[in-house]
Image (cartoon, rainbow, N blue to C red; front, side, top):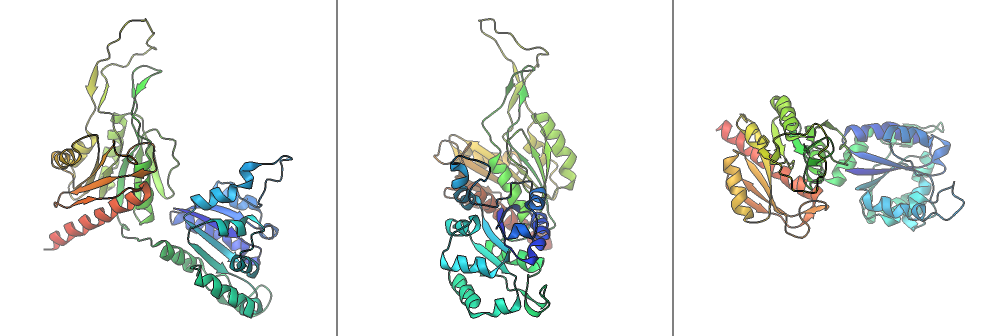
Length: 406
């Protein structure tokens, strides 16, 4: 999940760098927005180095002498892609702006533009914290659904003692997880997951592949990491970034994917096969580019290894999840695959349905479980589908443990 961290101008701004690292360790992707005052306390370069992303410090690009439309509407883009807006430290000034709808910089404008949940962690002088204006602004923000992580009491930078110290990382991260309603129900599990397409070489220039973007598999990997699992992602070629907290192994061909799965299978407690593996590969790969002659060409294909079936034959105590992308007889084909491949769960979708399949951010799936439960889901984002799949994985895992105990 993506968190936008707003850093405002207080002495505690330096602690935001440590908070970035903690959030990353928790599996979040972090983007930082700084106020002008914050830049007086800590350099934007620090956050850029930690996140690997551009740090936004102003509403408009400064270097361009001409109007820059991209920078003028960047707050809208950030507002739409973030899952949570976290302000730490939050000064009295920024909370006053938020509560009164003042939008005179990037961060305050972002607050008005986003529909994502908002968490603020105030830090300031004790008298500023206790001032009726500040408390009134806090109550107004709370009434609008903003989650406030109250500051700690102690010795302050100004030399006074009292409430006003930025809350500890544990308290802030806990608030983030509570607001996002994130569960840690996969802690102790190791998830081996395949995603993306494979590429089967015809010659040094050409290859056979499919339309898979890898988005669904990557969404499952990201969700599993957020829920506490150790995730090993065996990925075919995609343009996607590796989800935070996920170990990625890059492969190209089905044979390479199978080899990587076999190498990592012993460490897994759950194996999820979301990759769109090519069913066939050229029987022979030309060592030189095949020249165009103007006539027909015959390409002889041979079957690729069935990665799901191969792994399931050695499943042991592991939970096995397969995917079925179908264009007809979805339920019939999915149930057959469930039995034939010795899987515990099949995630099936109809590629002909609008909003499902490749190259879109949504999916429409039905989950077919070995215990007879069929669960048809409405059109959801792939991230939402990922969590629903993992909900079913957790249910099946608990069921297996219960049966073993009996």
